[in-house]
Amino acid sequence: MKGDDRLEKEKKEKPSRWRLVVIIISILVVSTMGLILLSERSAVRAEASTLPALATMIEDNQITGLTIRGDLITAETFDGKLLSARKESSVSAFESFQLLGVSSETLKSIPSVVEDSRGGPASYAGLIITMIPLILIGFFVVMAVRQVQRGGGGGMGMGGGFPGQVGRSNARMVSANAKENETTSERPQVTFDDVAGAEQAKFELQEVVEFLKEADKFLKLGARVPRGVLMAGPPGTGKTLMAKAVAGEAGVPFFHISGSEFVEMFVGVGAARVRDLFKKAKEQSPAVVFIDEIDAVGRRRGAGLGGGNDEREQTLNQILVAMDGFDTDTNVIVVAATNRPDILDPALLRPGRFDRKIVLDLPDVEAREAILDVHTRGKPLDDGISLSDLAKLTPGFAGADLENLANEAAILAARRNRTTIGELEFQDAIERIIAGPERKGNFLSKDERKVIAYHEAGHAVVMHHTEESDPVHKVSIISRGMALGYTMPLPENNRQLRSREAFVSEIVSLLGGRAAEEIVFKRITTGASNDLERATRLARAMVTRLGFSQNLGMRTFGEEQGNPFLGSLGETRDYSEEKAQAIDQEMDTIIHAAYRQAKDILTEQRSKLDALAEALLEEETINRPQFEQLMAS
Image (cartoon, rainbow, N blue to C red; front, top):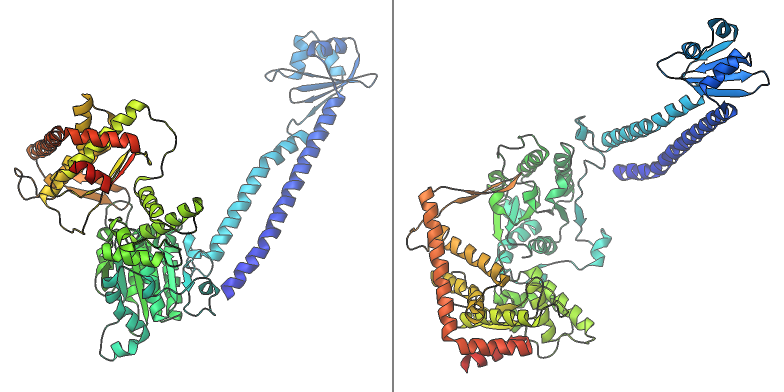
């Protein structure tokens, strides 16, 4: 509460401080303008003249006195008139008049006053103008130092316990009791029932939930308290949702913070926030602390760059110490999530810190159906929609992708003024997510549409006539995203293992579009650039990673190197130049053999290629039943 009172006091003080700054600046500006006007008025009283004219008047005894200020000479006549002229900087006023023919006796007889050129209103105005930026810079520096000293003294190396805002953790707490936290009344409490498609992860986390509920049952048997749970998996697989479900099932407070929120420009702030976070969690024990994207601070140390005393490593060290410092009776579970467990520091992964390592992989077809059932609750669906069929149409989709699919389908239905969501909306949403939005307008010429039609028909025909290729679900020449057309295969079952023949079939299918262009038009276009990139990556993986090369044998070549400060540094070559040439030759052999096979298939199936291309030019999109009918004819 004291920290909150201090923040409220600072909020009240800020307007008065800025009001004072505005007043000071206004006074300085008004004073400067007044001095400048005064200087200009005094300068206006003297009439401009020339030095020779003044010399002539001095010789004629028309001048009663001279005033010299720097290079400006002001002469007063007998009738009270003021005349001013400027001299050269390198010559004095008397020397200037002598050079113009005025005698020394005449000059000595005229009263002369020499004033300091640095004085006067104009000089003071210039001084004030110079001082205004310096005053402002000094004010902001003082305010910044005072803010750091007040909010986080250690941030500037001044020590202290960071009693203020800088050293405080930014973790958001979601309480299990809606009365304690109003935010929980705005959204439902997440439990395992709200998480679909991750049954194995639920089973492994069940003991964590039981410990949070009944810690004494484990402690009586001498079981060590689990300190942390590391959840790894691709983006969108539900790591954050699963962490919330653990807290929801156990009915305990849930502290949520991102790994990047620990790190600040001031050294020591991240470590102070870690201490503050764990202090709050212990006060609310039992509780769940969730650190999202922990690889932001938990990357492997000792990279040799950036030193060992930087802010990120200090924050990591504090996390390690805090997790080791849990008492045996402290019911606090740390749950962390990452997409890159391979780059985490080994000290984080050892038992005693993260005791449980749970992998959340992409969902299979049954899991996708369950996830779709969760995300379509409350949405009006057509009676004929089958979630099982939709699950089969979405291979490789993560839980977040499926949630986005249901939302995109609802948006399309609303845009089309429908009262329910139909199968067409789901199919269009799938294509929108995979290939991008449809590009409107006739920006392709007739000849280009024909080339694209034969290109996509080549992919589809080759895919249909190669072994271990997935069935063709849809072929279209409607441009979506960056693609001018697309051929969509559909896996019929979940495959965890792939054979060499499956890789070869995929490369052959990728090269079918270029082969069709060469066979039909006797020339090639840039339409196959992405196909060639993908085919090259597959061929290289076959040779250097998977041991599918018949000539190079069962070994891998090269190792990708990364650095926590510089990111990927490319590949470390652990093979000779002769092996590098052999790798290139083997890749060329695989790709050229696949291209010959694609051309042979299309030459043999030329009639089906022409029929499919003509159908695409007429209808633009061919679905699976139409495609199979064309291939059977």
